[in-house]
Length: 244
Image 1 (cartoon, rainbow, N blue to C red):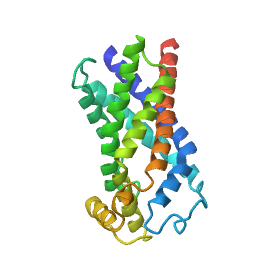
Image 2 (image 1 turned 180 degrees about the horizontal axis):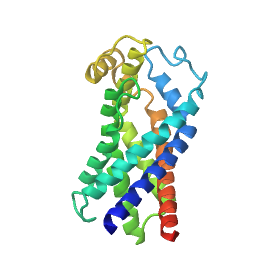
Image 3 (image 1 turned 135 degrees about the vertical axis):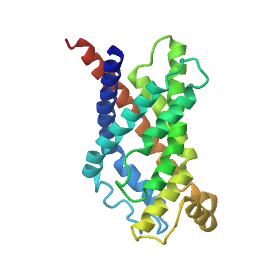
């Protein structure tokens, strides 16, 4: 019974911490994501809006990010607990991959391009979260104690930036599909056809359009998101221990 109660407490803590982290990162990074999306538009950056209205939609994005981030982390933490393995096991990265993938499936039907978004986010999380966890474990081992929240944030920045770079083509495809469904660009079909179309018309540079703003935004986002998550989670767990 005690184990069940502890598990529920940790899950609820992860939910609240994830929600807070999601709101923080969206409030700060929404404009960079808007710029990146416009860089990937087949219309070109200026015709897609340039720097105009890059803060439009920030409040609704922040409101929507709380339940999304909360749902991700309650799933991520639960699956990690359910697939518990020894910390020295070579299966640890696999556990983190499965937990991150489960978290990314989320709630369907919230926005256009759901399938293409999941196809982009699952590979991203397959890279980011095992790398984040591995960097934290390595840093903890080197200093002989668990990483602080700012160290977790640094690990999140490195993991996020690397994952962002290698999954940029999938992000380009997702952007094309969402723009096509919104009626602002020609139909792109599925992810593979969208990738093929970009390769045919713009080559390798087209597949990696917006890679540097994406890396910058997600590195900073990883720093804020995962650092805020760890800080809030640690605070709430400490608060729970002090409560009678």
